Image 1 (tube, helix red, strand yellow):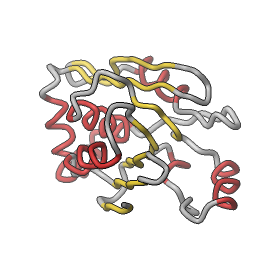
Image 2 (cartoon, one colour):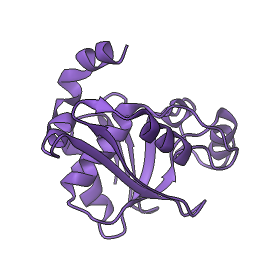
Image 3 (cartoon, rainbow, N blue to C red):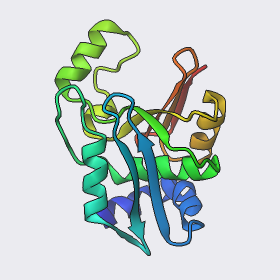
Image 4 (cartoon, one colour):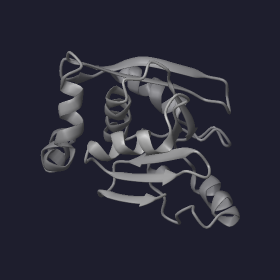
Length: 173
């Protein structure tokens, strides 16, 4: 199933994957969570193969911290995060603000903010909201945009960037 997805998505995701190819056939994701205090630093792909145990770690790390709900995070989202991080040449990990959101969590957040989408890709494990301590919102969003691999939202007032593996689109200031 993934091979079919990759073939269909190849024109859209080729830039992100191309950036990762330069990683020496290794893909790594580094994040920490201010909400849970957890840290993640894992190689999740080696020489053309995703590592199931590492993906399970990513899924658990990016869970809905409010409910504890875990789903499979879309590999394309992980790849976009990793490619953007590599482009930024950053040694520090991302600060994950929001990964997966259960429908209940999304509804609660939506009741408090108009900027939360009714059908958020967070509820499908296809989005992440992140910060990078030594980079600003413009730098992070430019890196994500250059991947030509999904949606990128700039939230300068709140100091974070949204990245997803949905259709290519850009919003925010």
